[in-house]
Length: 402
Image (cartoon, rainbow, N blue to C red; front, side, top):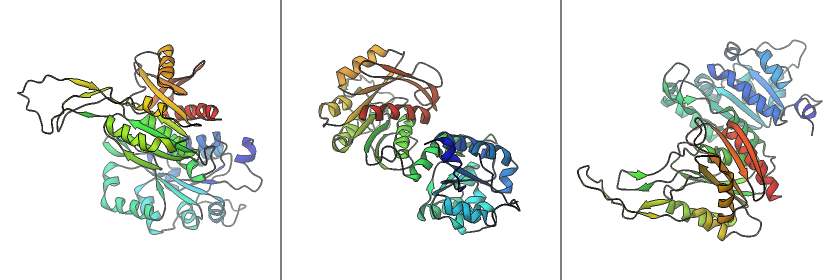
């Protein structure tokens, strides 16, 4: 299907109504529009007057390839533009959603083209909050979010980190690629409809005593990006999370903090999965004897380690016909032959090789660069945000799965 026919259909309708409200993060809504248009999804943008102080409607008109709805309607245009847009939209995404807009959405205040459209919406509502961390954590804002969730809205974010005003905490807009993934999921017409996908994410921690552990720097961002992309493609996704600060925006989620926990959950969940993406960094060793109480600093400590279960090899050894299994290899160099040896040794279909020696990518970073290593070929994915890398991985997985 061509881009022009999807983005600018003859009847002027768009499956996504993207509403931009006031806040410094409004400029990042441009990236969401760009991602949707790239995916051949039609977008109608609506803006509050406050949003127009940050980004002009001409920018969104150029990106979306259609006029923008504002509170200064075109006299020669439709009489009820907000009703037409809301009727056509299968998903309305509010990006960014300010604290003020969250309150209005929760309580049905219709004083702008955005809030009027929300009241008339027949499709699904997605809200991506962005604001100061104190505003986000205020009980009134949290109550408004809960109310929207109870009515079926999907809340994406916010992320934690440095905010525009220089403070730190939860309140940053979620990554635009993640928001676009969530919109695609709500549209519900992806290439993995009917498929069951199992994803592991994060890094296991092996207890030394009641407060200390052996672990690694995996944040879980890559695994969560894979889970989100599978959800966006319509799959039924189960994500097993090991000590992550991030979570997918949907699907079943199971916590498994240690290698033994992960192995046990995988043994239960893997047989039903069509696609298995083992992105978690699993500890190779654990203490032979872990204390149940805190060890005193003054005590001598002779630490003896024992190997943990090889979770990936165990899953591959018990695979059923038709499953596609993907392993991950975090290395200090781009050693393709070592990754290919792992592929053969573990008995999997693909290994995603991640060079963690490069700054700003891999463990605990927003970007990644990988090599997709098959039995007789490899595909290099250049450095990009992890949601974009997840697209490349799943494109290859779909080709393998047939």
